[in-house]
Image (cartoon, rainbow over all chains, first blue to last red; front, side, top):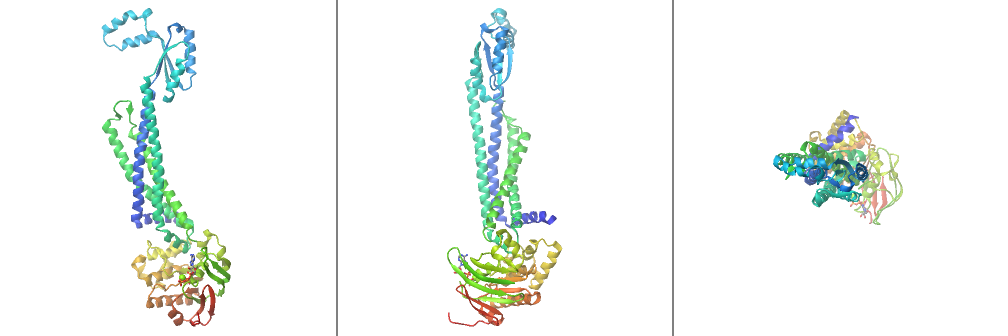
Length: 302
Length: 230
Ligand SMILES: Nc1ncnc2c1ncn2[C@@H]1O[C@H](COP(=O)(O)OP(=O)(O)OP(=O)(O)O)[C@@H](O)[C@H]1O
Ligand SMILES: [Mg+2]
């Protein structure tokens, strides 16, 4: 029957409306907590993006000792590098290519001429392997492993500062997610507690409903709809503010902070997910909070 | 209609509220339950509407063993009986019309039938004009009439009332009494009414069960209250 679906919905809306002050206090609880969650959510996603950006720009260069420049030796070295855990790509350049690359970095012809004597036999460059890793976390370990390969002269990777920065970003991101998770849990507690208080005030109502013959499910469904509505209403403001502020930030900064390395996630990529997550938390918490509170008060009296 | 056999009630806190209650109410009867405060009258009503479970003995209403009902089945059982309370127990955020129709929605009655029936009982209790009022906008007597209308909306065979006039002044009490008598007469509804009010008992004479300290001390078929030694 259609009324089985419509009655709780209609009653739910009426309930929100008729218990105005209770509804608004629950809504505010939802609004505040979702606001905080959205901050940490966007923060963590962007820090994650920074870390990734840095990780991708970092590669290891491993030079080959002069006495291991034979094709046979270098094949062995290349295979050894590829078999290291976490290694993504290995690219090889001969010392001549390296020298050419070095020359090309100068624009004036005079400077280039000045380096001519070092071409050919006198080339001070080494044959070099450029190695990228799948996960920035493996960078140091990979570098150490490459260094240990027989025939490797020196290993270099953006230096300790890159690793340090990645470590810092990693822990910031972790902290961000942690706080987001923690505030989500707090939100669940706060919201369901507020709903519990508003339903406690209506424990008599629930008892009366049982008195006049309403089954538990019949009593519960409008309350659950009310919870959903309150969760959704409470999510509107934080979602709107988040969209507006993040778009403004993105436009104001031009899409990155300080340098290209800190590229912000574009609003169109991140916001749809963020909206779904926030609205989802609001609605789910409203739904569960009211469900469990009503269920508790259904058992209050026989 | 109503039958208590060797019913005892001891509350969890150790209070013995009822001892060996035996009585029977036939269909169409109107019975008063009277007795001093604390004598167990409300306890008896709570055993009848399923809110409390007897410690011993059986309570049967319309053929249902009320004390054996599962918690989730209690509301379903209550569709067979109407209950009126001293404090009305109306839903504060529903209008008069909605309060009454709620008792019919729970049995999934068709919408047009609900409307018709609510109008009918509102007319019966003399509140045709008050459908859109909220309970707080009505006098005590009017609220109690709404409660009566709700209790009889789905034509229960039994109506039990715990001091329905307890919060009302004498003229309002008379209105409610007239209403209950009308329901008893016209629908043949069995009525069991707890009261404190000896004026009512003596004015509208009916079978009267007297409770004292949890015992039935008198069951007067001809009604009227007989003062006796305490
Ligand atoms: N829920 C309860 N828990 C424990 N004891 C109770 C409970 N309800 C009632 N009692 C006790 O049971 C006894 C009978 O109470 P009951 O309410 O049935 O009396 P009553 O006849 O309705 O009195 P009144 O005329 O004042 O309404 C009293 O001693 C009371 O304190
Ligand atoms: Mg009482």
